[in-house]
Image (cartoon, rainbow, N blue to C red; front, side, top):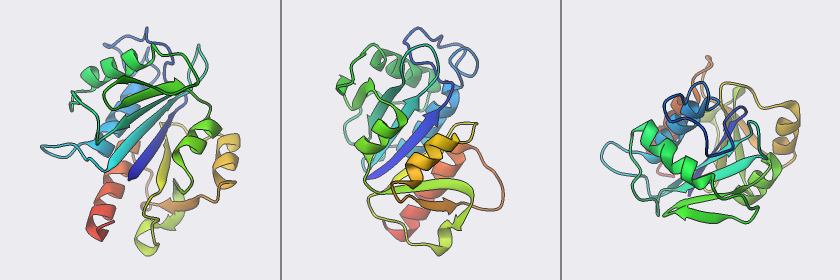
Length: 193
C-alpha cells in the first residue's frame, strides 16, 4: 500500500467551509485535494494500491484526519470541488474513533502524532535537501509525509524523525506538494514497488 499523509496547517476542520473558496476561506484545502488527486488518480482509473490521508489542523475545532482509500472509494473525481464535498461530509463525524463517512472515506479527530500512529510504522519524510530519492531504497509499505504550502513545524518534524523516518528529496528545487506526490508515484511505478 502506498500511503501519503498531507498536513494542512490552515485547512478547515469543520464542514462549514465554502466549496467556492477552497484556497481562501477553506484554509488552502485546494492543496490537500490536489495532493489527494495526485495520490489516487490515474488517467482513467483510481490507484487501488494508494491511500491519501489529509490531516486538517486549521481552526476552529480539534485536528481532523480524513483518509481516502483507493481500493474502496466510490464517486471520487478529478474535480476538486466534488471531492471537497466528500471531505466536508466526512468532517460531520466528530469522534476520535475512526468512522466511514462514505465508501472508502474514513474520518476522525487526530493529532499529528495520532495520525502517524495510525498510518505507520514506516515513514518517508519528503523534504527539500533530503537524500536523493533516485539513490535510495524505498520501503515497500511506507507512508510518505508532506506538508501543504508551509513547512512541518519543529515539533511535527521531531515527532516524525523520532519514528525513524527516512528523509528523501526529489530534486534541487522546491515543488508543489501534489507534484511531489506525482513524482513519487512515478518513481515507485518505474521500480515496480
